Structures are given as C-alpha cells and as structure tokens.
Image (cartoon, rainbow, N blue to C red; front, side, top):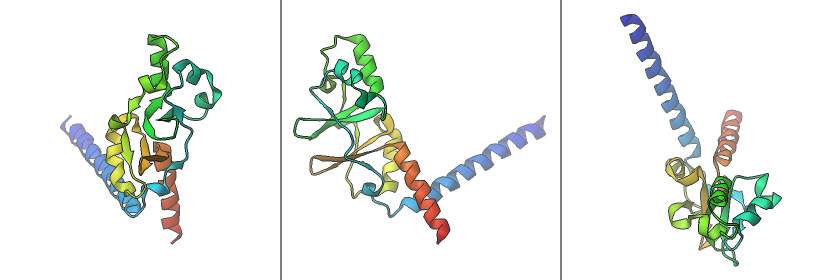
Length: 164
C-alpha cells in the first residue's frame, strides 16, 4: 500500500512540475507581446440605457459573444455585462432594468492599457471578474480580451517559434 501512495505522490509532483514548466514557457513567449496584439478590437458594446429585455431580445447580443462592454452614448466605457448577468437581472426584476443598472462597474472589472505586457495581465485576468479584460486608452474603449484571445495568441506564438 505504501508503494501505491508513493507512486501517486510522485505522479502528482511530476504533473505539477510539468504544468509549471508549461506556464513558464507560455509567459516567456508572451513576455514582449503588448495587450494590443491579442485583443478583439472595436467589440460590440451595450449602451447603458439599453434595457435588459431589449438586450436579451436582440440577436446581436445572443449568438456571438457572452459578454459586452457597457458604454455611454459617446462610447466611454462604464463596465461589463454578461449574458448570465442579464438573465439573472431579467428573472429578478421588471423589463425596465437597464444594462447600466445591472452591469459590473468599470471599477470592479479588469482593465488594461493597450501597451501593457500581455504576460503581466494573465494573473489579473484569471483572478478578475468574468475572466475578461476591457482594454482602455485615454478613457476610450479600444477592445476586449477573453481567454479565447489568449489561446489564439499563444497558438500563433508557438507556431511562430517552431518555424524559427
């Protein structure tokens, strides 16, 4: 029985070391990549004045993405709204609740500057609200970053490194 425990502990330590080595490799690949190179630019936004009922009824907000930056009429970022948040707000209240009332405010969202290093953003993204990052430059929304954007960037960097 002791041998089985030692084997399991050894397997666990090898798996943990392999995962740590992979993280170090990925961080190394992304060390010189700015956030601007990995974002989805000019994302579809949700106006703060839009009602939750209007958002859930509009096909633009239902089929392609699961989260949307919330903006003022002139495009200034205010926060982040997920479809899950919208559905929860819809089930709790009347159809008059606005996206601006139900959103995650900008002060609680993960926000980055386009020139920030991508590698430094990962820990904040993993710990941040909704695992999404609003990319803001001079009080203007320039993009959003999701885990899919990170995966796509890592795949591209890995392929580029292999070719060199």
